Image 1: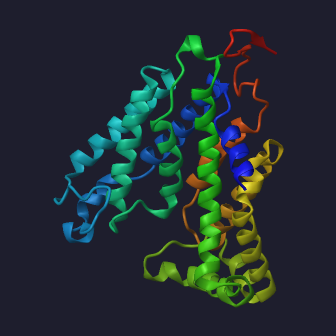
Image 2: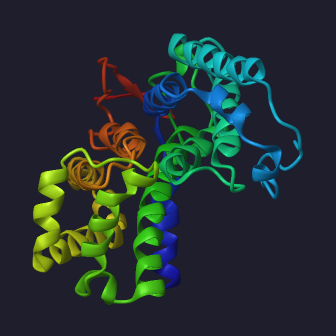
Length: 299
């Protein structure tokens, strides 16, 4: 067992190219910028302060933010994203972007934590708060400090999905798949919009799936299997793209059948897994001759 953990540790901290850190940082910044730009954050100001009692990330703030303050944080976050894209003080800009996004999502959640549809993005992006961001001259360099952040991001992705699946088994057991659980989830989704909830995009299809228990059970079983095997999919470079496609289909079905907005999850997975599915010496959007730690070019 000790030997296994030693091999895993060696793989996580192996050297990597600087351009991979920059690529994933830019893609994650794009996901966060989309989230910031496509939500009306000023709506937080309409909620009573009592609803935010017991906050964790923002527990130091007990008042009600004004719409102007919320928009200001949104604008600062978007400005930081532009700096990341332009590679102007990218590390500092990414920290500012993450703080703005996490603060707004914590306030939006009202329950003291980031909402489920944003939590994966927040967790994965937090890895790059501690990453060394390469300068233009170090884009091609291969260093340990550039190798661990992308692999750590993959590990966070894998554990987030695995824990999500494991929690289903802990709290519901095999009944999460083999009972009428998913059938009732679909039926509740179909009626949720009557009380102000999200409306399924494909109501007729959701109705049809809910009518057949074996179809609902198959969807539940497939989702659970995908979550529990996420570490295996993401550990192998050649199966990472398949995982991106699979989680896109899974979250897409949630959107179609229940109407829940989880599009940031597959985008976050793609931001990390797509670059990491390439050969270590192949950049995502530019050709680069990789230079090893010893200074010799690597083809």
